[in-house]
Image 1: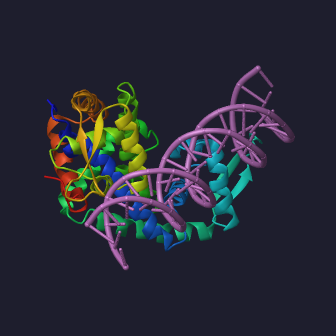
Image 2 (image 1 turned 90 degrees about the horizontal axis):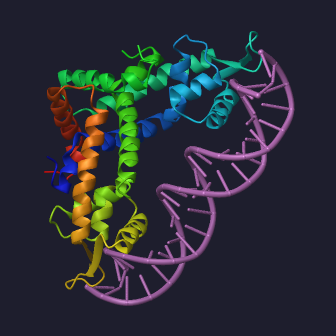
Image 3 (image 1 turned 45 degrees about the vertical axis):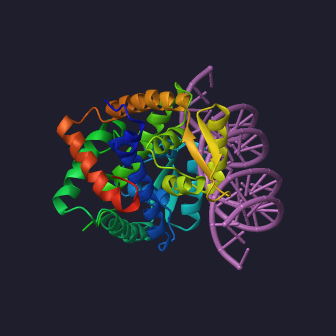
Amino acid sequence: MANEASSVLTSAGYLLIKAGVHMSRRLDEVLAAEGLTGRELLVLAHLSGGDELSQQELSRRLGLDPTIVVGLVDGLEERSLVTRTRDGADRRRYILSLTPGGRRLARRATSAAATAEADQLGALDPAQQATLRTILHAVMRPHLPWLP
Amino acid sequence: MANEASSVLTSAGYLLIKAGVHMSRRLDEVLAAEGLTGRELLVLAHLSGGDELSQQELSRRLGLDPTIVVGLVDGLEERSLVTRTRDGADRRRYILSLTPGGRRLARRATSAAATAEADQLGALDPAQQATLRTILHAVMRPHLPWLP
DNA sequence: TATTGTTATACTCTATAACTATA
DNA sequence: TATAGTTATAGAGTATAACAATA
């Protein structure tokens, strides 16, 4: 099986990588109109879930080095979208929260992201889109333990 | 719809991006044992298809800047996996070809890549894997015009 | 001693501009 | 004048190491 090297180009794995890159680019384009990057929207999305997250926990969820999260949160804090509050129980930690403005922007940007997604998946009928989501959820669930 | 920002985290778009990154990392890990990167395997895969490709055409197919393809082909040529031949009809172009050794390595690496893919998609039954491939093909077909 | 957040720094990856040779 | 390939270089993005504050 898979003896001809060109089979790589029609494999699910390759198509998955390519589709991911395309979706990522499209998402960043659409979010640029809101003044956000895809990564920044992910921070807002994680904070809107209700859990009290520290930067360490956030870096684990995002799969990013903690040193990168510093600058990421810096940028959001400067724009008054996110706040850092010292954790009383462990004063080394910050607890990250959304400001009301951050919550508003998160809603707008989420809507824009949904548009980009629908745009990108436009070739699929609704049933196929649901199937794709279900399958990807099954694939990624083990690697994203905080998923519902 | 999509009013709660945390819905981003369970959207098909986000899962697609994450799954793509995971697959890409896993692929590079597995291919490292063959002394190849994922990108290098893609070059070999495109050249094994039979079309006579120039570096420009290759850069379009890979979605990479032509200046990056220079170094990519350099590395494969140094290892005698690929050859550059001047196109007689247009002496500005190189025609890229696989050497026998390049073809052999492409087969081995393709097999390794298939293993990585099966590994990553292990949570899916065969029917779901086929469905995923079909759906991704439909999504990406317009952006990858050289696909069969 | 270990952990959270931080800074500085070095490294990798990428794109831009400018060049050559051919058309 | 435009295109294929090349080089040099600057910019962005990343990880590594070392630090202060706290546990």
